[in-house]
Image (cartoon, rainbow over all chains, first blue to last red; front, side, top):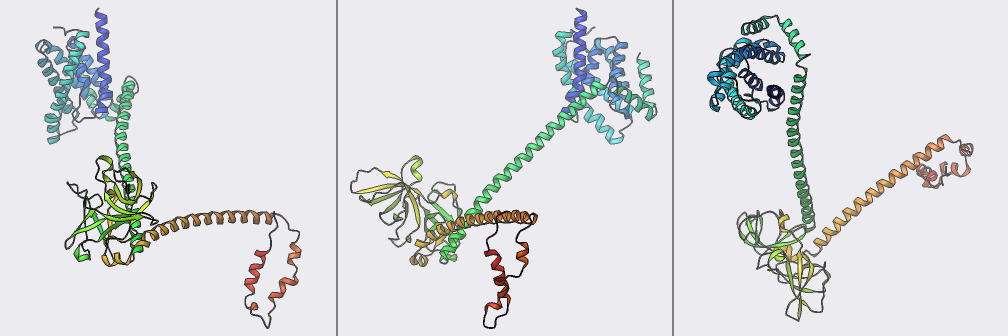
Length: 162
Length: 349
């Protein structure tokens, strides 16, 4: 039973990663949905902090492979967010959908902020616009999609571990 | 684990650019390959979607331009016809733009952009290249209003083009599709008209001169009166197509315009025949040129048996070249020499 659930979980995780590299480029919105963040958070609330951090690091490294200028920034951001999510899941990941949405929103925004701070590409007003306008917008969109994903996959992969 | 991952990330961030690129390239070449391929496909799909929109826009604009070209061509054709009509009328006419209203009653009248200052007077016939449009009713300084043939008060004495049947043309006041047709009433019972017969103005009544096409017979109308025949006519002029008209001034109308539409038809026929002739002539010329070229090339390849003979001076060919004291022909030896070889039958290859 557990292995079947684990297999479904892996499928959902891979599907989210695949969506990140297929749907996101097609939509090409300025504030776009971060499916990788959803996938990392989905793992983080179901795994121990160590495993969650490792998964976050691996996903971040994969995303960094596409942007060599900021190589390591994504890994750092997702590692920290995955660890934090895995640690704080008891407080956040209740059955309340609004709380789940806030969790995804904060996770994505925090990851963006860490990424922006680590990559040192933007500065001044550009950094502020990206950090305070586009990142929250992207986080809100990601939270909305993440909520839908959570609702859809909950019957298949089960509720998060407390 | 967190500390290890954070440390690794920080190390990755501070690595030299070349080393970071190498590691990133290694990842892209190994575990990220499927994801990179997916992203590439997605980008291609997005470009295809955008390109489709762009190509659709281009196709739409080309289609729009093509439709506009048709409209412009039709307008040019009509203006050409109008120029032909003007050339046939020669004098005593005022060209005017016809403004179509879209309100109630605008089916019956037409505003023209020529008025008293241009020489337009009431009761002047309004014509188009196809035939009769109507009659000027009201004239202002720079505009005038004409009643057109669907107007309930429109009347014109008319006859068949061969002059065998006379009657009065009225608008057909029926309902539905036949509303915008005409009626030829009061035709003598003995004068039966076939469908397609051209009806022209008869010149009686003093407004419309003789010979302006009014319409063609569609069918006979059954009426209770037994002493005359009535016919349904298809108007010569479609009002929706009318953009420019000619107002025929009364002096010109008195002179008669009977030959104008005939001339216009003849000139159109002449143009068509002329165009056909020129095409045929061009084709014949090109065929003859090709035939001649073929013949010449064959002749150039084949030694001619009479080539030596031809080189010899012949008694009848040398003589005309001699200057003759009593002849004017000697003045034009080149013409005779030019005609002679052409008149000679050419040997078949």
